[in-house]
Length: 397
Image 1 (cartoon, rainbow, N blue to C red):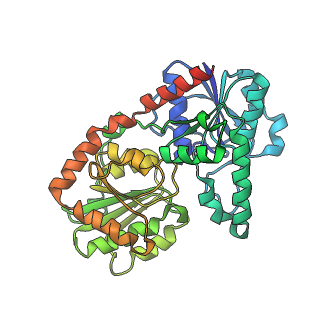
Image 2: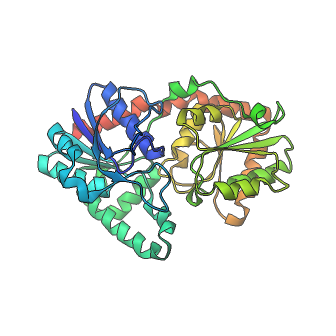
Image 3: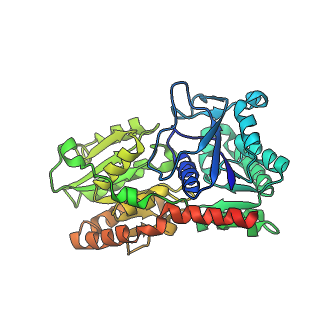
Protein backbone atom coordinates (compact mmCIF):
# COMPACT_ATOMS: atom_id res chain seq x y z
CA UNK A 1 0.00 0.00 0.00
CA UNK A 2 0.93 3.64 -0.40
CA UNK A 3 0.32 5.30 2.97
CA UNK A 4 0.52 9.01 3.75
CA UNK A 5 1.02 9.96 7.42
CA UNK A 6 0.31 13.58 8.33
CA UNK A 7 1.45 15.11 11.61
CA UNK A 8 1.46 18.49 13.34
CA UNK A 9 4.83 17.90 15.01
CA UNK A 10 7.70 15.72 13.97
CA UNK A 11 11.32 14.85 14.53
CA UNK A 12 13.84 16.11 15.49
CA UNK A 13 11.44 17.37 18.21
CA UNK A 14 10.99 14.51 20.67
CA UNK A 15 7.60 13.57 22.08
CA UNK A 16 5.37 10.54 22.34
CA UNK A 17 3.62 11.64 19.12
CA UNK A 18 6.77 12.10 17.06
CA UNK A 19 8.22 8.78 18.22
CA UNK A 20 4.90 7.07 17.49
CA UNK A 21 4.75 8.46 13.94
CA UNK A 22 8.35 7.46 13.29
CA UNK A 23 7.86 3.92 14.59
CA UNK A 24 4.70 3.44 12.51
CA UNK A 25 6.32 4.84 9.36
CA UNK A 26 9.41 2.65 9.69
CA UNK A 27 7.37 -0.40 10.73
CA UNK A 28 5.13 -0.10 7.68
CA UNK A 29 8.21 0.32 5.49
CA UNK A 30 9.71 -2.85 6.96
CA UNK A 31 6.54 -4.66 5.85
CA UNK A 32 7.02 -3.50 2.25
CA UNK A 33 4.57 -0.60 2.17
CA UNK A 34 5.43 2.75 0.59
CA UNK A 35 5.26 5.47 3.25
CA UNK A 36 5.41 9.25 3.06
CA UNK A 37 5.30 11.56 6.09
CA UNK A 38 3.85 15.05 5.55
CA UNK A 39 5.11 17.24 8.38
CA UNK A 40 6.34 20.75 9.27
CA UNK A 41 9.82 21.38 7.91
CA UNK A 42 12.51 21.25 10.62
CA UNK A 43 14.37 24.42 11.51
CA UNK A 44 17.25 25.45 9.28
CA UNK A 45 20.19 23.13 9.84
CA UNK A 46 18.10 20.51 11.67
CA UNK A 47 16.86 17.20 10.35
CA UNK A 48 15.07 14.13 11.72
CA UNK A 49 17.44 11.93 13.68
CA UNK A 50 16.95 8.18 14.27
CA UNK A 51 15.31 7.53 17.66
CA UNK A 52 15.69 3.76 17.69
CA UNK A 53 12.61 2.74 15.70
CA UNK A 54 13.37 -0.33 13.58
CA UNK A 55 12.81 -0.21 9.83
CA UNK A 56 13.74 2.00 6.85
CA UNK A 57 13.39 5.78 6.95
CA UNK A 58 10.23 7.01 5.19
CA UNK A 59 10.00 9.59 2.45
CA UNK A 60 9.26 13.10 3.66
CA UNK A 61 7.20 15.94 2.25
CA UNK A 62 7.75 19.20 4.10
CA UNK A 63 5.29 21.98 4.85
CA UNK A 64 6.43 25.55 5.56
CA UNK A 65 6.84 25.92 9.31
CA UNK A 66 7.65 28.33 12.12
CA UNK A 67 8.65 28.24 15.80
CA UNK A 68 5.56 29.18 17.87
CA UNK A 69 6.12 31.86 20.51
CA UNK A 70 6.05 31.63 24.30
CA UNK A 71 4.45 28.31 25.28
CA UNK A 72 5.94 25.99 22.66
CA UNK A 73 9.15 24.16 23.65
CA UNK A 74 12.37 24.78 21.70
CA UNK A 75 12.55 22.84 18.45
CA UNK A 76 8.78 22.49 18.13
CA UNK A 77 7.70 23.55 14.62
CA UNK A 78 4.17 24.42 13.54
CA UNK A 79 2.95 24.31 9.93
CA UNK A 80 2.32 27.76 8.42
CA UNK A 81 -1.16 27.47 6.81
CA UNK A 82 -1.00 30.66 4.73
CA UNK A 83 1.92 29.27 2.72
CA UNK A 84 0.32 25.91 1.90
CA UNK A 85 -1.03 26.71 -1.60
CA UNK A 86 2.51 27.16 -2.90
CA UNK A 87 3.98 24.34 -0.83
CA UNK A 88 6.18 21.86 -2.67
CA UNK A 89 5.48 19.36 0.11
CA UNK A 90 1.73 19.52 -0.46
CA UNK A 91 2.20 18.88 -4.18
CA UNK A 92 4.50 15.95 -3.39
CA UNK A 93 1.86 14.47 -1.08
CA UNK A 94 -0.82 14.76 -3.79
CA UNK A 95 1.48 13.27 -6.44
CA UNK A 96 2.24 10.35 -4.09
CA UNK A 97 -1.42 9.34 -4.56
CA UNK A 98 -1.81 7.46 -1.29
CA UNK A 99 -4.31 4.65 -0.88
CA UNK A 100 -4.62 5.45 2.84
CA UNK A 101 -4.30 8.84 4.54
CA UNK A 102 -3.53 8.58 8.25
CA UNK A 103 -3.69 11.81 10.28
CA UNK A 104 -1.89 12.14 13.61
CA UNK A 105 -3.33 15.55 14.46
CA UNK A 106 -6.87 16.82 13.84
CA UNK A 107 -5.91 20.46 13.32
CA UNK A 108 -3.85 22.03 10.51
CA UNK A 109 -2.37 18.86 9.04
CA UNK A 110 -5.56 16.99 9.95
CA UNK A 111 -7.56 19.31 7.73
CA UNK A 112 -5.05 18.75 4.94
CA UNK A 113 -5.42 14.99 5.42
CA UNK A 114 -9.21 15.25 5.34
CA UNK A 115 -9.25 17.27 2.11
CA UNK A 116 -6.68 15.04 0.45
CA UNK A 117 -8.51 11.83 1.38
CA UNK A 118 -11.77 13.26 0.02
CA UNK A 119 -10.11 14.43 -3.19
CA UNK A 120 -8.52 11.03 -3.83
CA UNK A 121 -11.56 9.10 -2.52
CA UNK A 122 -9.46 7.05 -0.10
CA UNK A 123 -10.04 6.22 3.60
CA UNK A 124 -9.04 8.71 6.27
CA UNK A 125 -7.67 7.22 9.51
CA UNK A 126 -6.96 9.30 12.59
CA UNK A 127 -4.93 8.40 15.68
CA UNK A 128 -5.95 10.39 18.75
CA UNK A 129 -2.64 10.90 20.56
CA UNK A 130 -3.45 13.76 22.91
CA UNK A 131 -6.06 14.63 25.52
CA UNK A 132 -6.26 18.24 24.43
CA UNK A 133 -8.43 19.36 27.36
CA UNK A 134 -5.52 18.58 29.71
CA UNK A 135 -3.48 21.34 28.04
CA UNK A 136 -6.16 24.03 28.27
CA UNK A 137 -4.32 25.77 31.13
CA UNK A 138 -1.86 27.15 28.57
CA UNK A 139 -4.73 29.29 27.20
CA UNK A 140 -5.13 31.23 30.45
CA UNK A 141 -8.53 32.98 30.63
CA UNK A 142 -9.51 31.38 27.33
CA UNK A 143 -9.14 27.86 28.75
CA UNK A 144 -12.85 27.13 29.26
CA UNK A 145 -14.21 28.44 25.91
CA UNK A 146 -11.17 26.98 24.16
CA UNK A 147 -11.92 23.53 25.60
CA UNK A 148 -15.56 23.73 24.46
CA UNK A 149 -14.57 24.77 20.93
CA UNK A 150 -11.94 22.04 20.73
CA UNK A 151 -14.42 19.39 21.86
CA UNK A 152 -16.97 20.45 19.23
CA UNK A 153 -14.31 20.53 16.53
CA UNK A 154 -13.03 17.08 17.43
CA UNK A 155 -16.48 15.51 17.20
CA UNK A 156 -16.90 17.09 13.77
CA UNK A 157 -13.48 15.85 12.63
CA UNK A 158 -14.05 12.31 13.91
CA UNK A 159 -17.20 11.89 11.80
CA UNK A 160 -15.14 12.33 8.63
CA UNK A 161 -12.82 9.44 9.55
CA UNK A 162 -13.25 5.90 8.34
CA UNK A 163 -11.48 4.76 11.52
CA UNK A 164 -10.29 6.40 14.74
CA UNK A 165 -7.36 4.73 16.49
CA UNK A 166 -7.21 5.10 20.28
CA UNK A 167 -3.98 3.98 21.99
CA UNK A 168 -5.83 2.79 25.11
CA UNK A 169 -9.16 1.30 26.19
CA UNK A 170 -9.88 4.31 28.42
CA UNK A 171 -9.53 6.77 25.55
CA UNK A 172 -11.53 4.55 23.19
CA UNK A 173 -14.39 4.50 25.69
CA UNK A 174 -14.31 8.29 26.01
CA UNK A 175 -14.37 8.81 22.24
CA UNK A 176 -17.21 6.33 21.73
CA UNK A 177 -19.24 8.08 24.42
CA UNK A 178 -18.71 11.48 22.82
CA UNK A 179 -19.29 10.27 19.25
CA UNK A 180 -22.39 8.20 19.84
CA UNK A 181 -24.11 6.24 17.12
CA UNK A 182 -23.69 5.64 14.23
CA UNK A 183 -19.96 6.40 14.50
CA UNK A 184 -18.87 4.66 17.72
CA UNK A 185 -18.00 1.40 15.91
CA UNK A 186 -15.26 3.20 13.99
CA UNK A 187 -13.08 3.48 17.11
CA UNK A 188 -10.30 0.86 17.31
CA UNK A 189 -7.85 0.27 20.15
CA UNK A 190 -4.27 -0.08 18.88
CA UNK A 191 -1.55 1.02 21.32
CA UNK A 192 1.71 2.42 20.00
CA UNK A 193 4.37 -0.28 19.95
CA UNK A 194 7.96 -0.06 21.12
CA UNK A 195 11.22 -1.69 20.05
CA UNK A 196 11.38 -4.21 22.87
CA UNK A 197 14.49 -5.97 21.58
CA UNK A 198 16.28 -2.64 21.14
CA UNK A 199 15.49 -1.56 24.70
CA UNK A 200 16.64 -4.90 26.08
CA UNK A 201 19.90 -4.51 24.16
CA UNK A 202 20.79 -1.08 25.55
CA UNK A 203 23.80 -0.76 27.84
CA UNK A 204 22.38 0.75 31.05
CA UNK A 205 23.78 4.07 32.26
CA UNK A 206 24.22 3.84 36.02
CA UNK A 207 23.63 7.26 37.66
CA UNK A 208 25.31 6.35 40.95
CA UNK A 209 28.90 7.19 40.00
CA UNK A 210 27.85 10.30 38.06
CA UNK A 211 25.91 11.69 41.02
CA UNK A 212 28.32 10.48 43.71
CA UNK A 213 25.74 8.15 45.24
CA UNK A 214 26.51 4.94 47.13
CA UNK A 215 26.89 1.82 44.99
CA UNK A 216 23.98 0.18 46.83
CA UNK A 217 21.59 3.15 46.44
CA UNK A 218 18.02 2.29 45.43
CA UNK A 219 17.42 4.45 42.34
CA UNK A 220 13.97 5.57 41.23
CA UNK A 221 13.66 6.99 37.70
CA UNK A 222 11.18 9.41 36.18
CA UNK A 223 11.18 10.14 32.43
CA UNK A 224 9.27 12.76 30.50
CA UNK A 225 8.73 16.41 29.77
CA UNK A 226 8.90 18.53 32.90
CA UNK A 227 5.65 20.47 32.61
CA UNK A 228 2.64 21.03 34.88
CA UNK A 229 0.36 18.62 33.04
CA UNK A 230 2.84 15.79 33.76
CA UNK A 231 2.81 16.43 37.56
CA UNK A 232 6.60 16.07 38.01
CA UNK A 233 6.45 17.81 41.40
CA UNK A 234 4.51 14.81 42.75
CA UNK A 235 7.49 12.61 41.86
CA UNK A 236 9.80 14.64 44.10
CA UNK A 237 7.30 14.80 46.94
CA UNK A 238 6.77 11.02 46.86
CA UNK A 239 10.51 10.36 46.95
CA UNK A 240 10.92 12.86 49.79
CA UNK A 241 8.31 10.99 51.83
CA UNK A 242 9.74 7.55 51.02
CA UNK A 243 13.28 8.69 51.86
CA UNK A 244 12.17 9.07 55.48
CA UNK A 245 12.08 5.27 55.62
CA UNK A 246 14.72 4.50 52.98
CA UNK A 247 17.96 6.44 53.62
CA UNK A 248 19.54 4.92 50.49
CA UNK A 249 16.78 6.14 48.16
CA UNK A 250 17.79 8.31 45.19
CA UNK A 251 15.94 9.81 42.21
CA UNK A 252 17.02 10.47 38.62
CA UNK A 253 14.70 12.79 36.66
CA UNK A 254 15.29 12.35 32.93
CA UNK A 255 14.00 15.12 30.69
CA UNK A 256 13.63 18.87 30.43
CA UNK A 257 10.86 21.42 30.26
CA UNK A 258 9.38 24.57 31.79
CA UNK A 259 9.16 23.07 35.29
CA UNK A 260 12.89 22.34 35.48
CA UNK A 261 13.84 25.39 37.55
CA UNK A 262 11.08 24.81 40.09
CA UNK A 263 12.03 21.14 40.46
CA UNK A 264 15.70 22.07 40.83
CA UNK A 265 14.79 24.41 43.67
CA UNK A 266 12.68 21.71 45.35
CA UNK A 267 15.53 19.20 45.05
CA UNK A 268 17.75 21.58 47.00
CA UNK A 269 15.61 21.51 50.14
CA UNK A 270 16.94 19.54 53.15
CA UNK A 271 14.74 16.45 52.69
CA UNK A 272 16.00 15.91 49.12
CA UNK A 273 19.39 17.59 48.93
CA UNK A 274 21.94 15.20 47.42
CA UNK A 275 19.24 12.68 46.50
CA UNK A 276 18.09 14.01 43.10
CA UNK A 277 19.84 14.07 39.71
CA UNK A 278 18.13 16.22 37.05
CA UNK A 279 19.63 15.27 33.69
CA UNK A 280 17.85 17.88 31.56
CA UNK A 281 16.81 17.01 28.03
CA UNK A 282 18.87 14.19 26.52
CA UNK A 283 18.66 12.19 23.27
CA UNK A 284 16.00 9.49 23.36
CA UNK A 285 18.32 6.47 23.31
CA UNK A 286 20.36 7.99 26.12
CA UNK A 287 17.16 8.59 28.07
CA UNK A 288 16.21 4.93 27.68
CA UNK A 289 19.71 3.79 28.69
CA UNK A 290 19.51 6.00 31.80
CA UNK A 291 16.09 4.53 32.54
CA UNK A 292 17.54 1.03 32.29
CA UNK A 293 20.19 1.96 34.87
CA UNK A 294 17.57 2.54 37.59
CA UNK A 295 15.77 0.08 39.88
CA UNK A 296 12.19 1.41 39.83
CA UNK A 297 10.09 3.67 37.64
CA UNK A 298 7.76 6.30 39.10
CA UNK A 299 4.97 7.71 36.90
CA UNK A 300 2.61 10.50 37.97
CA UNK A 301 1.19 11.97 34.75
CA UNK A 302 -2.59 11.79 34.43
CA UNK A 303 -2.85 13.40 30.98
CA UNK A 304 -1.73 10.50 28.81
CA UNK A 305 -3.57 8.60 26.09
CA UNK A 306 -1.28 5.62 26.63
CA UNK A 307 1.83 6.55 28.59
CA UNK A 308 4.36 5.08 26.17
CA UNK A 309 7.16 5.39 28.71
CA UNK A 310 5.35 2.89 30.95
CA UNK A 311 5.85 0.19 28.32
CA UNK A 312 9.46 1.31 27.83
CA UNK A 313 10.18 1.07 31.56
CA UNK A 314 8.65 -2.40 31.78
CA UNK A 315 10.63 -3.53 28.73
CA UNK A 316 13.77 -2.30 30.49
CA UNK A 317 12.88 -4.60 33.40
CA UNK A 318 11.81 -1.92 35.87
CA UNK A 319 8.81 -2.44 38.14
CA UNK A 320 6.50 0.58 38.03
CA UNK A 321 4.85 2.61 40.78
CA UNK A 322 2.15 4.75 39.17
CA UNK A 323 -0.95 6.75 39.86
CA UNK A 324 -4.16 5.43 38.31
CA UNK A 325 -4.85 7.32 35.10
CA UNK A 326 -5.86 7.01 31.46
CA UNK A 327 -4.16 4.10 29.74
CA UNK A 328 -2.17 3.00 32.80
CA UNK A 329 -3.79 -0.42 33.18
CA UNK A 330 -3.26 -1.16 29.48
CA UNK A 331 0.43 -1.40 30.38
CA UNK A 332 0.88 -1.96 34.13
CA UNK A 333 -0.56 -5.08 35.79
CA UNK A 334 -1.13 -4.14 39.41
CA UNK A 335 0.67 -6.51 41.76
CA UNK A 336 2.40 -8.32 38.88
CA UNK A 337 4.84 -5.89 37.29
CA UNK A 338 3.95 -2.74 39.19
CA UNK A 339 1.76 -1.00 41.73
CA UNK A 340 -1.15 1.28 40.80
CA UNK A 341 -2.38 3.73 43.44
CA UNK A 342 -5.66 5.70 43.36
CA UNK A 343 -5.39 9.43 42.51
CA UNK A 344 -7.72 10.67 45.23
CA UNK A 345 -7.53 12.24 47.71
CA UNK A 346 -4.96 14.42 46.00
CA UNK A 347 -3.42 15.81 49.20
CA UNK A 348 -2.17 12.34 50.22
CA UNK A 349 -1.18 11.07 46.76
CA UNK A 350 2.54 11.50 47.43
CA UNK A 351 2.21 9.33 50.55
CA UNK A 352 0.46 6.54 48.63
CA UNK A 353 3.15 6.59 45.95
CA UNK A 354 5.82 6.60 48.65
CA UNK A 355 4.20 3.53 50.17
CA UNK A 356 4.55 1.77 46.83
CA UNK A 357 8.23 2.69 46.63
CA UNK A 358 8.87 1.45 50.15
CA UNK A 359 7.10 -1.86 49.47
CA UNK A 360 9.27 -2.44 46.40
CA UNK A 361 12.44 -1.73 48.34
CA UNK A 362 12.20 -5.39 49.35
CA UNK A 363 14.74 -7.02 47.00
CA UNK A 364 12.86 -10.28 46.47
CA UNK A 365 9.55 -8.60 45.65
CA UNK A 366 11.24 -6.10 43.35
CA UNK A 367 13.17 -8.87 41.56
CA UNK A 368 9.99 -10.90 40.98
CA UNK A 369 8.21 -7.93 39.47
CA UNK A 370 11.26 -6.99 37.38
CA UNK A 371 11.33 -10.51 35.94
CA UNK A 372 7.65 -10.33 34.94
CA UNK A 373 8.07 -6.79 33.58
CA UNK A 374 10.92 -7.64 31.24
CA UNK A 375 9.87 -11.19 30.47
CA UNK A 376 6.36 -10.24 29.31
CA UNK A 377 7.31 -7.07 27.42
CA UNK A 378 6.90 -8.65 23.98
CA UNK A 379 3.21 -7.77 24.29
CA UNK A 380 4.31 -4.18 23.50
CA UNK A 381 6.36 -5.11 20.41
CA UNK A 382 6.15 -2.53 17.64
CA UNK A 383 5.88 -5.12 14.87
CA UNK A 384 2.73 -6.51 16.47
CA UNK A 385 1.14 -3.06 16.71
CA UNK A 386 2.15 -2.05 13.18
CA UNK A 387 0.63 -5.31 11.95
CA UNK A 388 -2.67 -4.35 13.58
CA UNK A 389 -2.60 -0.96 11.85
CA UNK A 390 -1.83 -2.58 8.49
CA UNK A 391 -4.75 -4.99 8.98
CA UNK A 392 -7.00 -1.99 9.68
CA UNK A 393 -5.84 -0.33 6.46
CA UNK A 394 -6.59 -3.48 4.48
CA UNK A 395 -10.08 -3.77 5.96
CA UNK A 396 -10.84 -0.17 4.98
CA UNK A 397 -9.62 -0.68 1.42
